[in-house]
Length: 370
Image 1 (cartoon, rainbow, N blue to C red):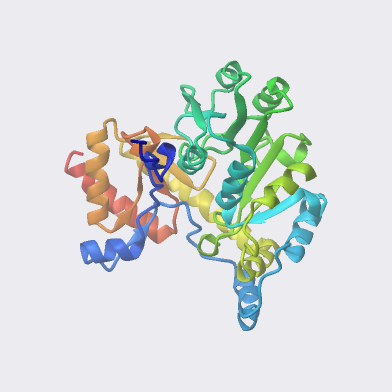
Image 2: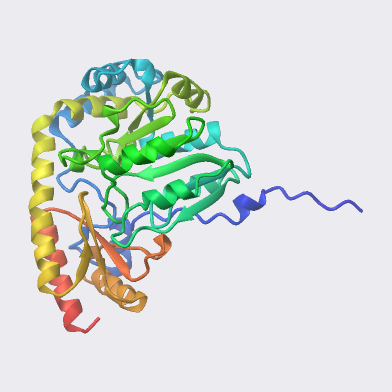
């Protein structure tokens, strides 16, 4: 008798579903709380730009029409801003949506992806979803991508290398010197994904390697409107690459995405320099206050250039207990056991009021000797 062929491939059957941060509504139902500070998903606590909302509202009357699947207006603005041809730009449902298209376009079962441990889980899920083999290298002692070790582990089997810069969940970044060395060692036939989701928070660092300062035919840069621009809820991101790469990614994209409202809101957000400046100033102020708090409480943390801080509770048990205590107080932070950092928690930088809420809950938690 013939063996029954399995409907679901083994690499899908054993794939773990990506777990997003806990929504406010879910915690409110579970704990019957009215005061909740969501500090677990690295969102913009100030909300979307007023200009983004204005543009979004103009599109409501046209919801019966399909979106411009070529995203002409938004691509035109991005091309002017970054001095690129529209043919070098791709739009998607957040940077993760484009990431999924890259995986579909360029990865086949059993091909090898090289990246770091303790990096963005979403990419790992996507790579495994096509049956690719994931090869991960430990972070360095200061929680950064270990560039020399990554280079040492490039082989003939390597198809794609993924680097999140800055990295999530550590908030660290690789420098220009490290990037230059890395690219000098990467063969031209290997695709490099540079995930710059937190670019706006770090681009003023003098030694940050803004990928727009380089022109490599084998590099795809990904950015998003979900973080600094405050448009997480409508899912829109963009990518830059050589025209040949963009063409092949577009072949596997869903038609008519991102949606028309997302495209309009992104246009408004790009034009609202004032809102972005206020966002970055709030992030800087809350960062200084939060590291002062953690230092005062004797809690170690990883210095971050993004809109979150990852702090060390010394043991997985301590982290789990404090996480639960914070939830009971109405404060949502991110546990990092799925990132192989079970002793750490990650807190997004919110408004002044939200961070005060976090401070109060943290202090009562430590009094209980977590």
